[in-house]
Amino acid sequence: MKDLPDAEEIYLRFITEYDDRDLEALLLAYRDGLYLFLLGYVKNEEDAEDLMMDTFAKLAVDKPYFEAKRAGSFKSWLYAIARNNALMHIRKHKMEAVPLEEETISDADTPESVLLKDEQSKMLYKALSGLKADYRRALMLLYIEELTHEEIAQAMGLRIKQVYNLIDRGRNALKKTLASISPL
Image 1 (cartoon, rainbow, N blue to C red):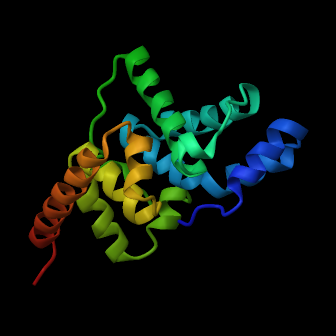
Image 2 (image 1 turned 45 degrees about the vertical axis):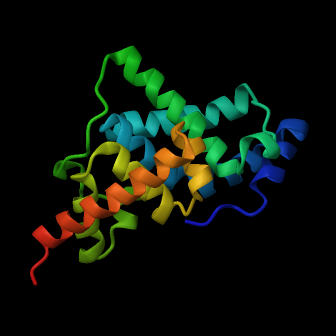
């Protein structure tokens, strides 16, 4: 999923002109990816949906300041806000951030099902859901959300070296998982 090219401008226009159409454009561009990212933290579809909406509510109500020089891309900044919301939710509800289980894959018309149109995607998603949560998040941000390593570090609250290690280990674990579930 590509980053919205003028997301920063749209957000800055929203916080100065209060035009709800700008916030709606950001919501349409980022909701599905953000939902999947949050689902990796909370494991519950309703909670992930609520946290995704809470993230946009924070933008609408609090209007946090975005500075590209300090924050990186708008997308990584948005994901960092979402991650913080998820971590606060987990602490508040004393939940553990655990990997997704097979039962979260459904044929219903959800953002997930749209992304999982064919059998290969389902197999890949199943393999990803079996990885450690940090590996899965890093790989999803890299390949699905197309964030840079620096943006992933910001979104996950890690150092860049940690991101490179997570991605390398995640790729290796994913290869092993795919090799064990796919027929040769």
